[in-house]
Length: 405
Ligand SMILES: Nc1ncnc2c1ncn2[C@@H]1O[C@H](COP(=O)(O)OP(=O)(O)OP(=O)(O)O)[C@@H](O)[C@H]1O
Ligand SMILES: [Mg+2]
Image 1 (cartoon, rainbow, N blue to C red):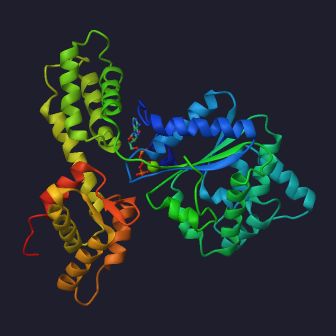
Image 2: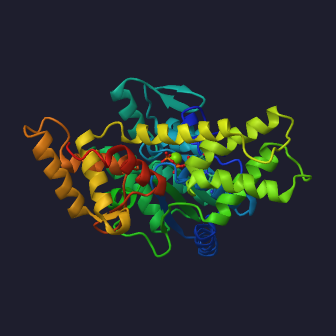
Image 3: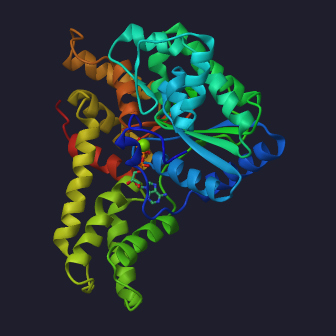
């Protein structure tokens, strides 16, 4: 199924596929238990991995789907939100277009929507909505598939926080809730597990679609990789990616790994900013390792990291960034965690001083945008943090000393 999902599954979804995946063992163990239970009981559940941008959610979705498929007991369908309210898209994602077309024909209902590769494409809003109503609904498509399949069905859905955009559309919300409902209540006629990935507010967003609480073990907040996993990823990029081979001297390899890890802070996105460049440099230079990592390569990696921070913070107001940095600096030993209330108070004071007419972003919006951009993350109810240690330092360096602002 994964192979014939069609063009509408954008290239963006491929972005996170990790060439050398390591770590996340605790999440996998829980997920594997859930899969085994679901298979045995012909049940279903929603398993959510949430975290800030660059933490590795998309990579987990790809990796876990591969592992599930390789057990031989699970088929995989990659869906996007539209599949949950547009049955043709659901059918295409499951490789079942023929079923929907047949059913539409047999009920005599037709639609004006052009069909390309089994998927409805249209720019006409009314025709699109007509297509959503024609024939079976997405949950029926899913049920039909699950009850015919000899294997369990693993669905992956990325960027699940974007469901919030469909909350106000009653028809779509009902359709989405219908799909989630048959998965959660195990009424699909076969084992179905939805592995969802999304930003830190995803569990709250799912709450607006009838999932007020995820079952035990089904909600995971991911952050930095453990040191051993981080080092394994870096090692693979050097040895396999850089084609260094087995004759590498261990102390030099260790030194290279140490140097790279000192810049990546366990953050998958940073590893990805630095390690592939190192691999490229090695390949270009005959895969021979000098005693130290060439400075120019590390500098490029560092620049990418800072560009990533600048991009993450670009839509926030400067006075809010300064207030945030001051708040971080005032914490115990510069700890990067704070309460929601303390942050709101600091942002409100900054707004009062620098934007008295409220022409710019409000403190509430500033918190929402910062969460969306991964500048801060919820780590517990009403408690926030700056999830990437080096971003916390970067915020302090860049905005912490602007005292007079
Ligand atoms: N466990 C891992 N092992 C190796 N590489 C990883 C791992 N997790 C993530 N990566 C790599 O790190 C980069 C960032 O990961 P990914 O795109 O999955 O993050 P994300 O949480 O989905 O971010 P976003 O919210 O921006 O979509 C990718 O290049 C990915 O391949
Ligand atoms: Mg992603």
